Image 1 (cartoon, rainbow, N blue to C red):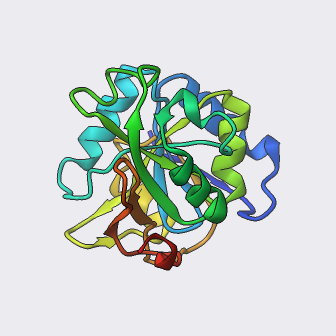
Image 2: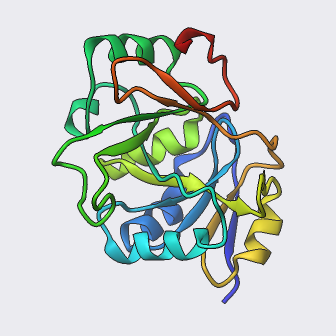
Length: 205
């Protein structure tokens, strides 16, 4: 069965164009969608089969960072424990091209982060994943679409062809730049930049 490809406006997505993507996520499938950096794999963090599919896709890549996309900072305390200082830093740069490593709360699904005390949190400056989260009513499991050692797929049609048996739907927002989010560890007292990517990281130095 061919992967469904849905053309979509990345700046002003029509909610009707997101309905099939929402259905796939709710049923435990895997979607591909444009963020404010690169294309991401999206799934339901509360579905074990969805996690297994994502991990299968990521098995040949060293980029195994999994994160939760949230629509804003309002409900972050449900999923992560963070200091007032970390909250203030995040508030200055989100939504934006950053993934923050934070201490996980007990609300994080155990099947998702077994034996890990931390989680990644993403609040991208991108209407599509933010709208998906709001419509789902819970975070979206997120990770990059893998490619080789250091690069990422930027063409959604190429992604659909290469991962035809692993993904269910692609939201086609055009070709994106090959630059992932910056990863900043805020789980300890001092911020630590784990990956330089999109976004200014000078605030965390």
